[in-house]
Length: 168
Image (cartoon, rainbow, N blue to C red; front, side, top):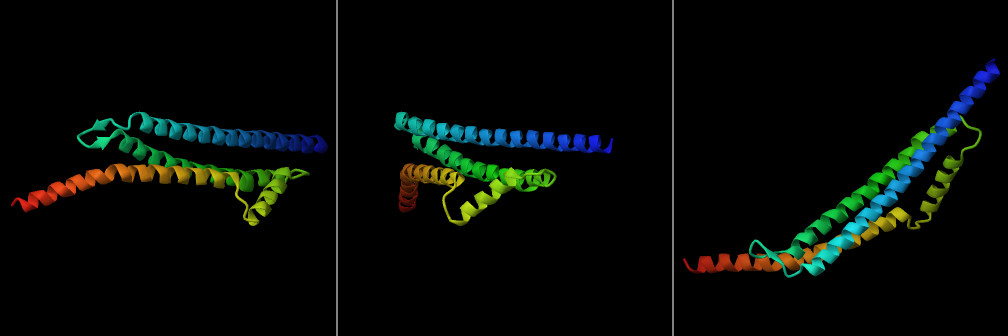
């Protein structure tokens, strides 16, 4: 009877482990889908800037300026999202899966995580580093466009202020 209870407990632990590792894989897949979303959004913003570059709102604010602002915001959100997913994946590995694996005869995810950590020590770029680099490059691109679009507005306002002071 005690042997059956031990076997049932082992099966339960293995079932929980299997379910959790499947959820972790689904989580990683959602991460990839989220990255595709951000990349598609950035591509749409770039094409929107190209096709609406001459459209002007509210006197001097161009569509390019608006899309550049949203591009910077999207890039920042993408960067933060990559960090959030990395943190949550590390928690899933280190805190949950490794704890469950302590009760199992083999520890594949613990071994995999140790391998990843060894790989990181060699200062090799990980996929998440590349994602963050892409987000940073797009943020800099959108920032440069934003500055190039907003500078004439500031110059015009400064000129008006200076001409107003000179007229007094």
